[in-house]
Length: 118
Image (cartoon, rainbow, N blue to C red; front, side, top):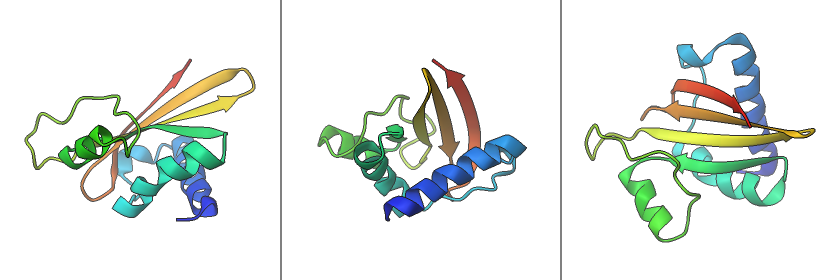
């Protein structure tokens, strides 16, 4: 995935937040897109840093090998085949930092979103 595509995905997230589309599950993430966003955003833009990847047994292995950002939430308690994933994005605007967390299911549909100002 190229940088422009990553920025396009994040722009879609912010636009959906403005109209409340998260609850409807209107946004879609593929495994490839999610896997590549941390590298692209964490090393190339400086404006947004992906600080957590999805939470699953597979992600735990990546993290243990130092190949993925730190997971900020525990692995799902719904069993080893449940792939509850969470992305946390830090936005720095002026002197404030905004953290947005997105949880999505196996199909890539967002099931929960929260925003916190730091």
